Length: 383
Picture 1 (tube, rainbow, N blue to C red):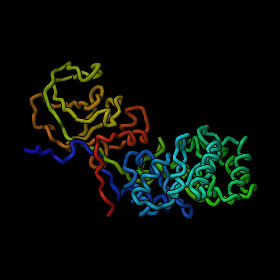
Picture 2 (picture 1 turned 45 degrees about the vertical axis):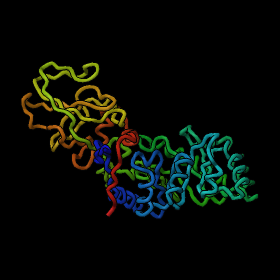
Picture 3 (picture 1 turned 180 degrees about the vertical axis):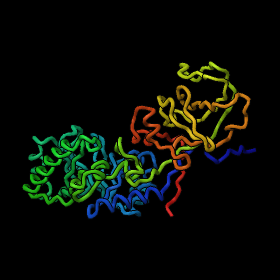
Picture 4 (picture 1 turned 90 degrees about the vertical axis):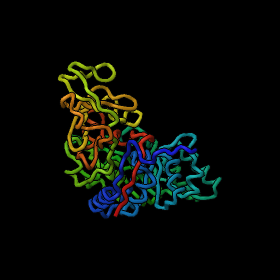
């Protein structure tokens, strides 16, 4: 006799595509006539790259962006044909596959010759975007080699091996209220780099520098295109402004159900290390999600919604579970019984992922991106 397993998830993340479409449309209106690139790296910031990309394009994004070529190839395999840029490479990056699948390649310098060789092997020109490091000190060509990079790119373009589509950079401090001076310096360096590229005969059709905080706070950075990352997921990149302040709607909700409910006496220690002890006789609810699911181990005291009421994480979060002190009479079996719906953050509770990020000492970007594959994504379609 075959075993029949339940098909209902025990913990889940809901992705609201109506909220996603709203965010894309809102951003497009802010930045027009600039185009919008929806950044769907890291599996769409944990939301599902293919599904996010499909909605983003339907809602008005004209480009898609990933960190890795392998991420971009998965979008092509799913039938997504929108312009697509990947920008972070290693010696093992499959450049030929990128060229054959019409994926634009971000070039910081050393990889240009490898891209050119892949283009020759594919017998197709590679579409590249040259990246200038204006101060973030990650990838991107430093100003000292920029002239040589543009010269080499121009030679390859004249030979029909590459086509330089754009020039881009990335800001270091656009999310900092006191970061305008840094943005100004980087922007000046960027504009000078574009002029150098043009001096070498490169047309630079697409200039793009603005990440989410820049596109929200600095209209002078919009140029030809903005790269919208965390903002499309309804998350604020600013410490002093919420998503609601910006007119954005959070896309992700994280839910589960109560797995256990039991009495505890005064002084009872909770979870590893007894970082929490019950101050009164009470009941403890067990929530079946832990750091293996992406719930930060350090988020002691983070808010939790259980059946319309708000509680706090009690004690250290474990690999698969954490505990909530229900702060009720130890004989009260009616509060949060086994099976009661729980939301860590999301639309039902109104708890933001920011609240969990603050409790864990991190940022909302990390909070949503780290939700593991053990947690199914339920896509609530755009209507």
